[in-house]
Length: 125
Image 1 (cartoon, helix red, strand yellow):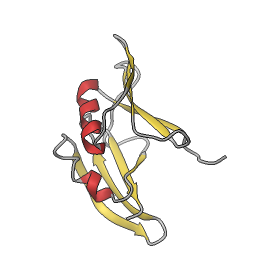
Image 2: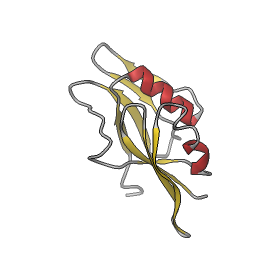
Image 3: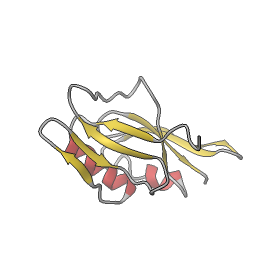
């Protein structure tokens, strides 16, 4: 096993708002691969051999949370500060500012997105 994590899904209450948020903080255009009346899915940045994830909307199955559940760390290399500075202008909130985990493990930060999900960032610098 190469990675314990291979896919994740971030719940959205408002798919278009969440799509705009992640497009803004990662500075890219999100491809929407499912756009149905009862389910929507947009892909987050990843390479062909890396861990992938998506923003998803399905009101009966996905419910955002800012206090409970999993804490997913998104790749913010080379520097989490660059991604973190775009969180609040995009409608999110910084919960824990960028701080060093250790010399070996780099840096982290925690934020809530436009939908109220609690997520984290990780970078080497």
